[in-house]
Length: 604
Image (tube, rainbow, N blue to C red; front, side, top):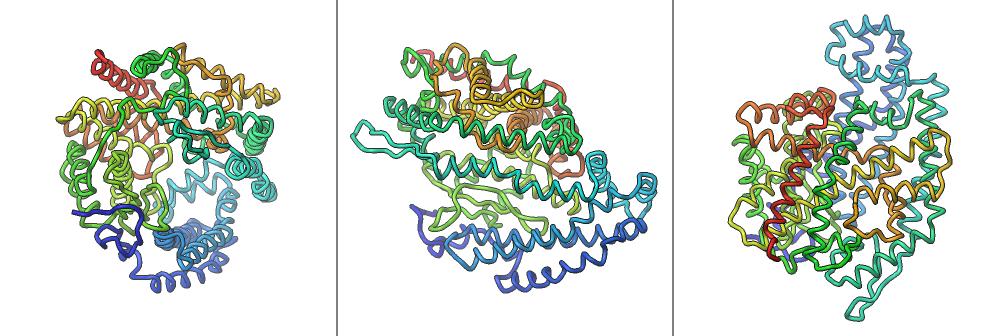
């Protein structure tokens, strides 16, 4: 049994608890040799420039070369970024990571002519090319590229827009500097007389404190900082929105939302159905707020009361090998092939870099490339149940990647952001069901129910609220109305009133929250979190309630990579995201969890 306590040096961690990168490169010298070879390939792009319209064979030759270069770059990049994340203080690996990112930029510049030359081929000639056997493998790739024909400008115009993109990042960069560097969040004094400095990193932890006066003080101090800079934040957000409108209109899209949905071929009804379904299912959320208010014994429930755990002093202990066994048990409905592959990867196969060590990147992720195993970065803690959930989550990503890369060719193996969170959230859903079905004490059951409920609230309800806010303020701007502090805060306040109902007392400064969400600088992204969890729970219900056919559909989805558009992939798995049903299924599950919590705490 392993016993890893606190951050230690990487050398002190057993080798079997670290990931094995030897399948990528034997060592750093091997990586550097391949790096030099690929650097020499940059100049070869010039051999293809100006030739793509000559024949289908010429176009195919260029695309094949570009694909092979991209594949080799992915492998080099994967090794460099994983080694760099092992210990951020090692300058040698920092240098290699910088080298590969610079090479990626050079290759992007060298290959930038491909899209413009393809677009310049007239439609009749391109159709002949697409029907040619030489381009059969690349047909889907080219058809996806050619969807942008009506949104592609002349070469000089495209060059001008590309040059303007650097200026277009100014609002986001200004927000990041203000929010992360210049904003002074201040400090508060806790009940023990200790001074607590407030940071973005500890804000949520402080909101989980059982000291209500501390929570209130932190909340008020935190948002007073945003109030002091609200005009600057409003100006930055307005500038970002105007920038998005400029680029969308320049590319001949009818709206920024339309441009964002076009990328993954998502119809607007998916976005609208999400919001409408959540609006129709707010009652269970209101019930949860009422339940939380009763269990905490408060006369009024505030936003700073929504994260404090309902179970005090929850204790958890599960070492990594036990966690793997527990996850495999939960995922057993996915069949022996799935669980055997995952077991081998999480244990003997050394997919996972398990424990925290000095200099190691924080957090967790799933990575890898087409020519490697999946790799999972963890900072596993035996005494934190979130570590078990995080491992299950990242294992979902890794198995999705494993199946996609094992089944699809390189060009079509990567799946899009719209479906990226489905497999990971699916695994978390099965883990919760398995844990709740076990022989656990009342306090653990309450803790698990609350954890799942709050996950739903934060991912489905909250992200939909954000998505609705984006839609409303972009529409205001696109109709020519000014975006002011009042516009933002009044729009957000109305949504707070809708999503919190009468059960939560809304503090005046809560409407300032709209200025602290970094995702608003990546337009129309947040809705994917909500659709992702909805699709995952709909699929979980279908697989658990079905038979071999439903399981085969889900596994086929995992194996399909990016071979189809995301809605087609999900439809093949049995979930139609153009209908309200998947969201309604997820919301029904939320309501059932609230019912269970209500029954379990009826006498409390």
